[in-house]
Amino acid sequence: MSNLTILRTYAQKADPSSLSPSILFTHSDQFLTIFDAYPKAIFHFLVLPRTASTVSGYITSTRSSSASDAALTMADFSNLRSLLKHPRAKEVLDDFKREAEEVKEKIVEEMMGRYGFKWDLWIGFHAVPSMEHIHLHIISSDLCAPSLKNKKHYNSFHPKEGFFLHLDEVLDLFEGGSSTTTKLPLSPSQYEAILKRPLACFKCHSEMKNMPTLKKHLQEEWEKQKEREKCLRVEKNATGDKRKRDTDELEMRDGAGDNSKHSRKEE
DNA sequence: GTTCTAGAAC
DNA sequence: GTTCTAGAAC
Image 1 (tube, chains in turn green, cyan, yellow):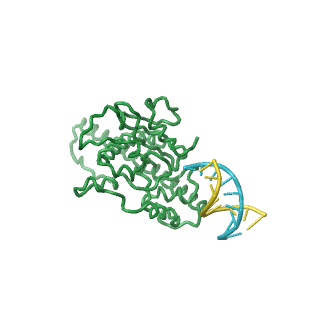
Image 2 (cartoon, chains in turn green, blue, yellow):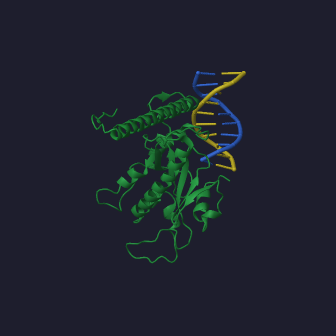
Image 3 (cartoon, chains in turn orange, red, purple):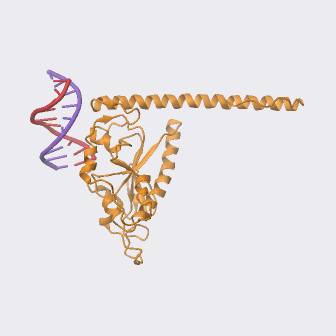
């Protein structure tokens, strides 16, 4: 099932809801979001632009084209590099951004429901993707998952190494007027070299000997974060309870006609 | 992208 | 002897 063009077959579906719920997370007229089949973090989704030849998708036979409105072809959606060569790249990336923000809200809801707190979601492209059809990763900032197995996996999602291209940074390429001549700063082989760099924790920056050591360390970092969030919630509740007690107290005093000394410093 | 596995590293 | 990596095959 895991061939290199599977994403394209999803993107071409006229009716995404025909996809299994174990694959499809959500969809709109222009995008569909699927669960990554081999998640590299607790939450890991792929946002794909739809290319079905329907009125709503990006590639349409009925679209009225003008000079400033060049048609997008399947080849333009091959990857980020090919998309960036198209005059409408910025438009598509802005659409990606809007869609990702909506998907992010849904994921945050899920985080709150399952964990009681939310943590960062990284949104970006791989500089050199392995699978056909452009796909935007939305991945939670824990990198704790069984499918994260080797150095290439890890470095490809490290938020600072440079292989993972944050969507906002890609959009920044369009700043400064030039909306057509934008391109990625490095060559594919330069990006691939990043994947071979030593393993460094993205949180504390310490270098790890090998993958088993790194994975153990990441798990510990995640456990620490969960513990911190748990403490924060207890503190928050305590503050909430205290506020409530203070309010009750004030109401009692007010009721008794005592309006003096209401002020109290927050902690 | 994953799986498999030879041989390097320990 | 076992663990781990990395390259070939798919």
